[in-house]
Image 1 (cartoon, one colour):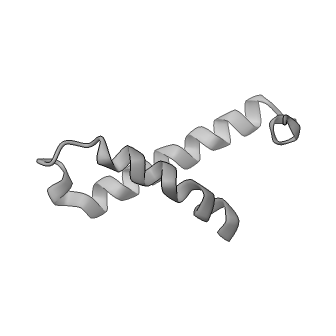
Image 2 (cartoon, helix red, strand yellow):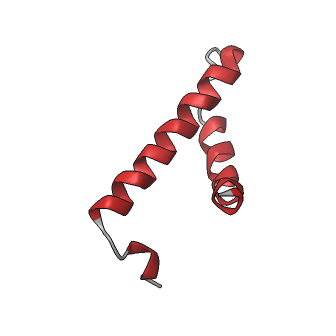
Image 3 (cartoon, rainbow, N blue to C red):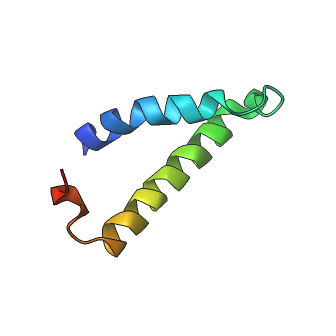
Length: 56
């Protein structure tokens, strides 16, 4: 589980940079939202494509 979180960190940081500065004031809530959406998106892809992890 740690490897999954570490591999998503650069993606999350890149997505958070795209957020306008007026919204960044509530950075903890926005960060949790972005990370949750990314995990849910990964879950949907994993359930839709069962052997996605074996694709090179």
